[in-house]
Image 1 (spheres, rainbow, N blue to C red):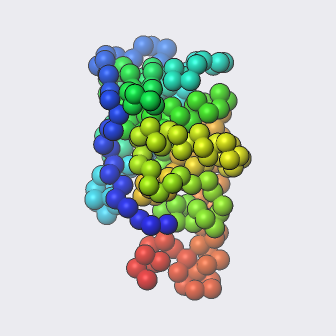
Image 2: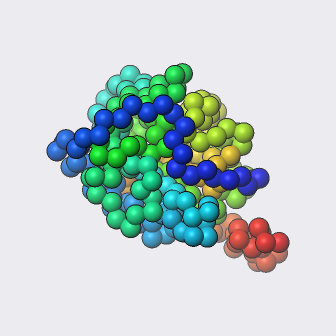
Length: 238
């Protein structure tokens, strides 16, 4: 795929945020995401590095709160705060509770110690297309992203930017095509290395992204044995 600037961390929706502590009930959910964030950071899927994306932080995680049916646009979720990707460790003070989101008006309403991730709108879109989705990880993997076509992964239109109403519409379109739920993963064609992973639990989402990462490594190994250009970094230099 064509590589574009990631433009990390820029909130593109109208945000109405109330800065206040999270409730004890919501704070109790934070460790469910912190554990997987540590794993994803260690394997380079979340973080901040001088040599990647002009030093900008990348990646965020969320967890839906209320079980059962809740109208679309009101499926509240806990999400890592904007500009927190570069932190080695996070705690409850680095999260936000998104309470409402509206694609048509491009608005998000939230509360918590930190404003929500710039990808909050896309997280909400994934919760809306399938009520069984409980967790969303937004990671950055050049391995999966570069091999999306070979792996036959659902991929958004490269012209659609992250964190926009258009991206939310793309999520719905991909879900209707049928492959999104099967894969548990959506490649963001216009967002450099961006991948959205989801599942019914943190464990399911984590297992999904690790499985696809392993498959991408397998593809790279197969390509490398034939041409010596298995790794994405090698292909970009070629």
